[in-house]
Length: 307
Ligand code: SF4
Image 1: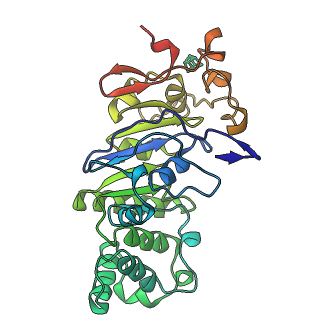
Image 2: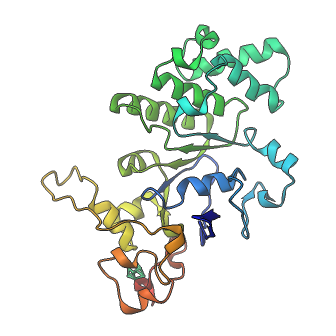
Image 3: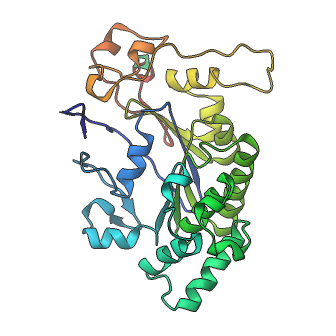
């Protein structure tokens, strides 16, 4: 990726598996590469971005080796995305119904006008919007309804995987809770596999089966949700959890992690968390830690895990 006029590696050493019907939480501070990862999976990086190596295996095919036409078939039909900020993602000059209908037609889910209209109504009903409102424009919807419409659009072609990139950003707390509940209900009802990008560890604890913790564009830790919350091995995961309120210890002190994540153009030569790590050692400043496997389903990149 080109950042500040120079080439920089936005993502390295990212590895995870998303199983059928599984919800994988992707967490980390702003700028750690979460959205870049999601756009890479769909091959929707901006023109300054390149995928130079790796594999994205989906149903036996490497998505990175598909032609653009083949990849366009996969997007929306197999893997759909709910983008951040519904107001920016929706076209203000077209009705909600037309926008959802276009997604259905473009991806050949159904073509007949009547069937498209029925499917739009069905989708709106599924997300709790009166189908009569399909003739209205985005500005006639509240923030929560716009986000519901975005979810309806993502489900338009019955995908197996939905990528939800901070789907409740910019919504007030009550509406956030409603949208999360809707997502959880639909995920279970439709058996969706979901990649859930969020800052909110409470949401992760509630909704996710496994968690990928990212830091500075690399995997800090990847494990099932119980392991991440009860036996985290990476100091960054441990610090993130200490910065999060614990309802079992309401008087416990919250801590913040001093400093900021590294800029892509000024990555430390060793461990990317070294400048902020409470356990930093001399070698952390020189050597990048490899991904260790504390158990077969657990990955963490820290020198402390060397046996
Ligand atoms: Fe901290 Fe070193 Fe582990 Fe990095 S490798 S997380 S700096 S102890």
